[in-house]
Image (cartoon, rainbow, N blue to C red):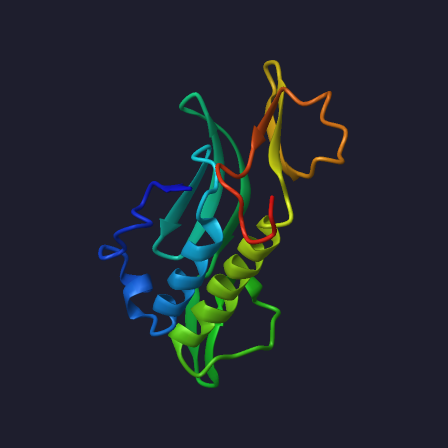
Length: 156
């Protein structure tokens, strides 16, 4: 998995540098994504991340896109996106860990159960990408990209 914002070198990302838990997250994430197809590209932004499907240099779709915008209130930190959520966090770092990194790590763990990325191309309308397994009917997909360039922990 390539990272357009520097998955290997995160020194420029202020949010990532402020998290004490990010080193554990990165160690876990790197173990999971070892051998993932280079057709998946991770973009780490100041307030979030996305994983996109790139085929022949062309962006086709995002498989996941998540953001967190911190707001400090008298009773703690919360994400501005979930205005109706009552959950507050003692620190901004704990909020980012809960809202972003745990969610991404969970998604990466689920990634191990898939075998490919299916992409439909709709002429003049765009494209749609989805994680698929070998038992799915893949005959209608424009592209079926094997997810793993080498076996992962689940044997895929």
